[in-house]
Image (cartoon, rainbow, N blue to C red; front, side, top):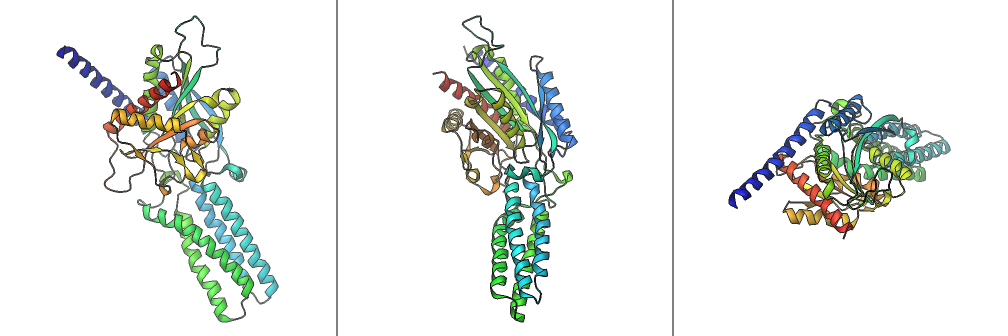
Length: 424
């Protein structure tokens, strides 16, 4: 009996080692494609490589590239345009300092309206709102998808043309984050997030004061010109350097999320005869996710158009794993999204069952751009996001083989918890 237990334990350890090696090999192959900003040639090459890795992992996996249009400058890189817009508004504001009072009021009002409208639009773009997409150039981008459906157990029916009883999706993204011009931008990042709304309020307030009081004294001229001028210089610096437009500064995506998601998908395929019948399992790695979540939005829109039952899907999203500390996102407060309580419970239950440490996200600032799960939640599809937040202190755990194994086990157990609940 002891010998049998040892054999089982050795087999379990061997399976764990194999999964970790698979994930690390997957990620290392994508390391060759650096600076994968949205729609860059390197991002497209990475998508093709993922497709090829899937095909080589199992000949039954029919991986495909799903093209869509993304707006590469949507999201973080929009901050730079705020600097250009501020320059224009500053020019109009300072030109308004002239002898003719009516002309001065009209020019100041113009600066106020342009500043408020333009900054509002660019801030919306910065947070990923795609209402003003038409103002930005679009480029082709690619998601990588594959799926399988479990066979019927108790009948000779074919799943080929049948609607699946349920759909489980495990997903991640392979594109890189825009970077900055500075190696350590944490302090400047926090300053800019607080300074931007304060500066916007002060600038508009000075426009209103100037129109109301006029510039009939030297004191007024100095105060109304000097204070906005100094504040504008600092704002220009922040807007121009908050995020870089260039791929050379991109922060690499280690693709641990995509790798673990594929390892989970492959293991589910191996278990297909023991899983609930006629259940569809989907793996997808998104491109363009750091440009307003373009990849996940395109995926959801495409499948909603094709599959009327897609709204019943259950989605486990593995956002970027940048530290060994795993976090669970219960909501996206800035976008008024509260993720499915059932999905959150499935993850928390898995964490407790496996004794895997899992923290609840509470830091809005570090996750102001939301999560993959939000794209699904916006269409009332049940989803949840697990991620490893960017290290902020020396106490943050590094990504290790234990991180990979914990994330894999947590994802597998979460899916099993979902299946058990749905088939009770």
